[in-house]
Image (tube, rainbow, N blue to C red; front, side, top):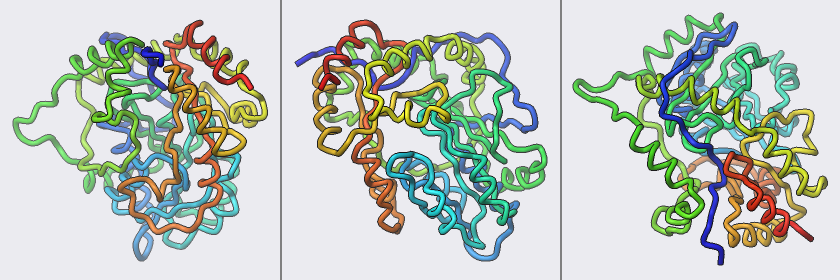
Length: 373
């Protein structure tokens, strides 16, 4: 047993206040306490804008983070799941068309680990549904330049633990300038203010502890502790939507620059060279892949994935199975959904490998041994 572990995701966080916050042309930018809160506000804005009769609905991919459902519930929207492809984290476009209804107010397009959804194709499908807001969920990706092309009516970023730019909390919502009136009405109904006398604790102590625990000799204290259940996927309700605290706003510019100047493509290309092209989701979907948060491997079948995962975990090489099951089957999620065969097949075969700044020559050599036929 190897008692050194590296985390599956996450770079060092800087406690440095310098630089300017980014701006994005064509969008109003709002800083909130989490990516989930940002998504909830985007959904509520979509509902205000559409003004549909009956309970408003939002379409979500059938494989994804349960925070998607938490945002919908907080915003007062009914989540409707559309299946994904068995070989692709993006929507099955026929399933998406079938899920649309006169009550649909939003479609959430998830950028999965740096592999973007086919936003142009979604736009074409939504031409016949002008009331629908396209929400670009970039919680797992962050642009390497402020002038990156964004497609959504609303765009969401997250700065939570394990995100491309992490502050152990925080999020951003970009909303098209043309939707300002709907956004203002949504903010009046969803946003809350801190209780009188409440002070948000600075994240500095948590950041120092997080940076310390990233050490391969210390990370096993958390990753192998059954009481902590680190990385466990479960539903957590969103209790409020509030602005981002001042300290994280100070730290954000330096951490964006740290991410953009980091090893990035150098690391993931090294990992990429170790993976069989037939099992590399990044190679299969190269036209949609940008900088990766984790390296996605799609195994031939569930038995192969489980065998590789056990071997990689035993060696402490930062492998994960992501959400492990379709969204409707995640603990705490209460959605009635169809079979969603694509999501089930995808979830059973997905394996991710680390591509963060902690991946060194030792880790690459270990990955090479573990992935060998």
